[in-house]
Image (cartoon, rainbow, N blue to C red; front, side):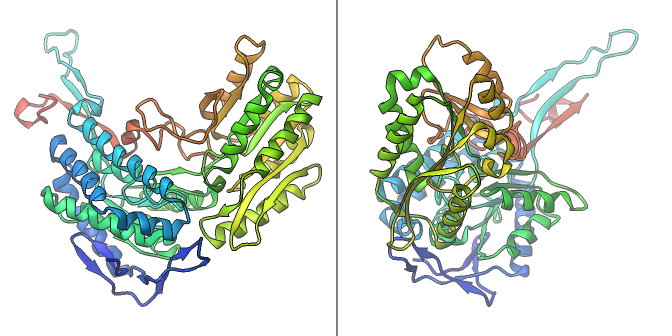
Length: 505
């Protein structure tokens, strides 16, 4: 049952006067539930509980925290069809997507549980001392990783499960030993409430301290701002727009004691197609990219929003094929009227920019549904007009036609930081290594003969990249290495074994 309350530790609270509802994109109408926004007092209560919980939770063994993560996974599955139905009502996404994303979320939790049962994830270093060394004795040094403190996680609009309440940021922070306060996304507050109840239930079952998890509602930015500025918060996790991520980053940097904001802010994910690939498998590549551009109505941070190739008759024909394939895919509802309006205005601005030519625009008169919007532009115009480099969140992609290989490399060099780059080519083609080197300076992950949509949860995955794709390119938001965002290195010098953590003694 959804009642719209905030979950603060093991209690529910609804002291505020401001309320809001979520939206059903398929019905083009509001959902029935009413949610109460958190007050300043409720924020303080959640942070205070998280601070108290941290003193206990940070010292718990990896096994106990792993049991907690496993229990969360089990409780999410126990929610059954109810949470799937609410997910679909609040996102407009189909059942298959909901089931797949729930599986991914459960898988992430269990992957971190496996990781932390062995304390080696802490990057332990033991450098034994030598009192007899001359001219000075050598101290005994033992390094570990310790959790930062309570963390705020902002739910993402486009992944109500995998990048939200119990998603990768929450799972990795809890695994590291950090209590989490989730600022629920207003587009799927009902989904958040059900998942939050599952987390709280798991916390009680496994003997976690009250305050290890809380969830606060808000339809605006005030609650998030107060959380980021609260002196009891030590780090922030965010997945969303560049505007939102940068605002949080600036806010956190303005504190008397600045804190890190690990923001993944999307990108246009350039795809480079070689001349040989166009000759050998033009049709295949067109189908592949049309499906990727429109997957989930283009509402992925890894959507291929930029395609780069050397101009030729083969490219002209391929663009026609891409247009035909994209227009075969019927419009689907976007997540929310605000996202639909931003996509519509953004794609219209892009295709109306001097030098850009619209080649496909498949829209619908029904509600907030949209299909693919495609455009072309020359390499010279793209380099000169940085506005064309901006992300349009939705099923949009721009094809850049370059004069030659030199201009193609110049186009890559003109890009800002990206999450991914893709190279579609034939093995053995000349110049590929040079393109890879250029891309490596701009992206966090390079895909060979595939598509960027789809991010495997793996220890080897990098989901991040140079700014503005993320606020710190040294870290990933996906995969077990993402735990390193929530810890700091810490060394013990000349300590007796009885005072050391068991795993360092």
